[in-house]
Length: 141
Image (cartoon, rainbow, N blue to C red; front, side, top):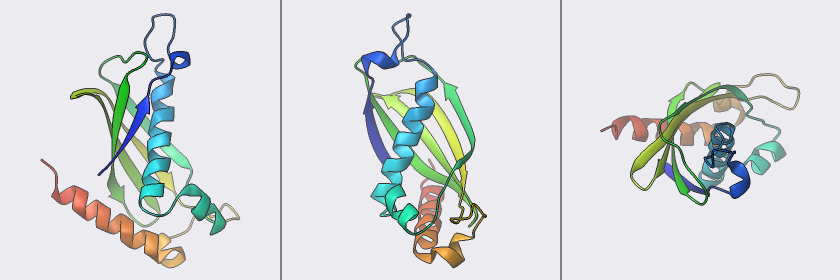
């Protein structure tokens, strides 16, 4: 599990002075990019290697509102990985209160936009993701 912190900016709030719901999806993407950097495969490195990892599915359940200037700690973990698809879970908290939970699903594509199997195309990343999936699965409360 990896944690990324986002501070709610004033412009991310709406007329009700709460964080607009659309921003949580962006916060998840920020956390995913930070997670990839943390494991040594930032998006810039993957693109240099000719690999992209677009979002093919996303889900977010809102539990509690946040406001400016809350600090949202976003815990990311690998919840599913099959070699061609990666699912990441996000638990967003302010202090100990869960404010949102979500999941994003990603595939891996080559430079021609064709699906790839990471075990063949980027075995080092495949091994890391398998290890993280096993660690996160074994550490479930």
